[in-house]
Amino acid sequence: MELRICKNEDKEIVSPMIVELMNYHRKLTKAPEEYWCTIEKGEQTFNSWLKEGNIYLAMEDRDVIGFFYLEFGGDNAAWLEDLYILKKYRKKGLGKKAMSLLDNMLINENVTALFVDVIPRNISAIEFYREIGFDHLNMIQLRKNYDSRLNKKDSVEILGYNFKKY
Image (cartoon, rainbow, N blue to C red; front, top):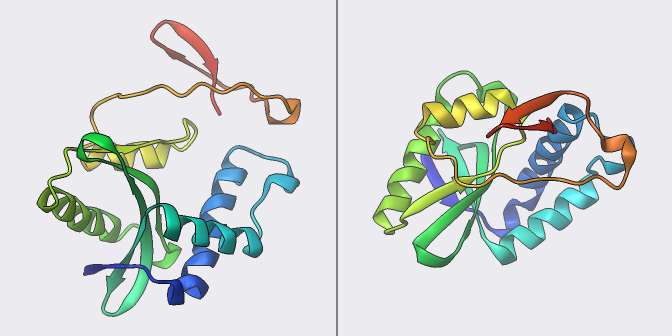
C-alpha cells in the first residue's frame, strides 16, 4: 500500500467518492434532500480541497481504494478533514493500514498532532479513530439549527450537559 498526493487529473476518481462520503453523512443525520451532495458539488469540493489542503490517495496494487483530505495549521498541527475508503475495501484492515502510512508520513514531517471531527451519530467512525490512537478529547463543537427539519431527538450527555446528538 502507498499514499500519493492527489492531482487535478484525479478529479473523476475522487469527486464521486466525495459525493458518497457527503451523502453518507446526510443519510446518517437524516438531512432533507436539498442538503444532499451532487456530482457538481463533489467536483467543486474537490477543486477547493486542492487549493486549501492536501488530498492523499490510498493505493493498493495500483488501485485507488480511498482518500484522506488534510489541512495544516499552526504549531505543526494537521486536521484530518475527511477519510474515505471505497465500500469494497472496507472491513479488511486497509483503512488502518492507510492510516498507519499517514501517521508515519506526518511524524516524518514533524507534525505535532492530528485532529479529526466526528459526527456523534457516526459510532463506527468514533470506534475506528479510537482503535487507531485518537484518545484525546480536544474540542466540543456545538450546533444551533435554524432549519427545524434538521433538529434531532436522540441526545447525549457530555460533561453534565444534555445535547441533541447530530
